[in-house]
Image (tube, rainbow, N blue to C red):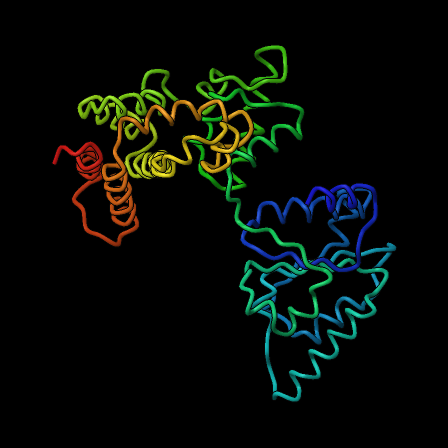
Length: 348
């Protein structure tokens, strides 16, 4: 993906791009990058950029629009959102003609048009069908980010900054794991940090100040309370986090964080894994870069929870997540949280 970004920035723009996958924010960033490389000013970009939707035109109409000369400029940008919903109309013979016309365009795209086709679908079976299969040479995949920590770290490094290990842990715990949210929050924290202290390192204090986290009631203290199997303190810290962030949103964040926490402990419950070098353990646990620092913490947590206790905690977390998504009944979020803590610590 970085190679594509560098290519666009160098001014080498392809006539057709096929962007697939759910990460709309990252796809939009690439679209903006292409537009800025094509046009010298925002005014020219606005005048020569068209955005249409798949359900509003057929493949033949799309080929026609892409073949139309731009007005008063050398290039035009045509963006098709929801390309997977491209209109299918007419008989089978007519639809076949539409596909052939579109395929002919792809074989010899107009030199004056840059065509971006965007689809959220990344289903392999669908992408193997026409008209998607004709686009395989133009395709770039944008799968859902699997490692939010790595994405946040890369985002910061692109701007010349780096997270301290504790800062990245706090950031990951309290920011929604979507590319849009991570990008916005990272940019905001960098702006704040650059005005507050020298150097290019994001500290825990920067996260506390920007994300609004209490220095007393946070995931570090929650981890310690759970490791001590202190039900009262674990519940109290969790309730404080919930009250600060909004009841349902706060509980969802706690569930998300603790699921990662206990899944890591579960993976470490295998003795052979514990004997591996720390760097290899970090990879197994999905810990990126400086997060390797926390491997020793998890090795300690593994001694506090048996494999059966860990599996019971994961089941309880999944049940709570299902309740928050409306799949299981519950009275209110605070009661749901207290029941979760009791199940995790075996106090039921």
